[in-house]
Length: 319
Image 1 (tube, one colour):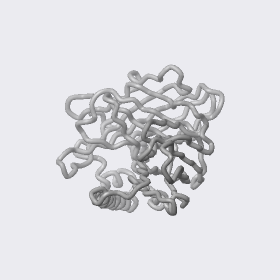
Image 2 (tube, helix red, strand yellow):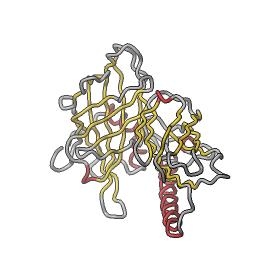
Image 3 (cartoon, rainbow, N blue to C red):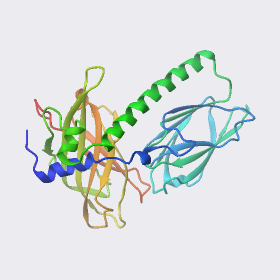
Image 4 (tube, rainbow, N blue to C red):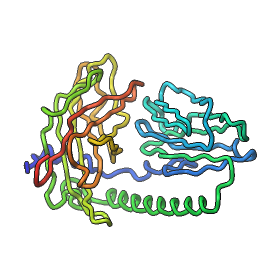
């Protein structure tokens, strides 16, 4: 396993830098977990705030086929509509706490005939799923919803404790040790420049690519949790600056991992090179094969930048 030079350790330490917990708190009226909304003639005109974040998807599920969708600034979103709902992915620059109205009408003729949401731009989180019904839920459904809410509350509490521990820890190598990020095998580093390719149509091309891996701890099910980081030096071949807005790591079988954190040195001006970093967490058995890193820029409304061939060092058998 390669021994990291001090500069590389510094780069990884930056990925593990303490977070501002207050910045992760949802704006008033917003929730980041699954939400169950019941609409009536009396309540459907109330303001329904839903958190969104550039690069993160939010799914809306309805009990009837949606009809017209009125979304302010639709060009700043990727919108996928189907028979039961729609998926929104903000792709362009937003101001923190900006509020975007969205009204969805229904085709079945039942009341209420439409519902209006206020999409609130959160600094780091997004509601993952919003389920909307226009009739009372059964007792069984309520029990299931209560159980799910309790599970999500426990998960949030665990995450809160983890973030507080990170924020209260030390910096540098001592901070990595204190947070349990070095693991028994330390941090492995791999130069993957030769294997990573930029897809045709990308605005950005790769000058350097390196991956990092740290086996951190075991979950309650006995499976090892792995921290992974990707660092890319990218050249902007476009005519406008490029600023990182979001990222997702896609596995060999199509599974997606949202980042724990992203970092960019500074906006990449046309014709220049700058570094970006993305950190994710997954179970050890999932760290196999070739991954695709997808990036979204703030200044463009395209389908993103794709980089194939991302691999991570395995401590025993290689990538």
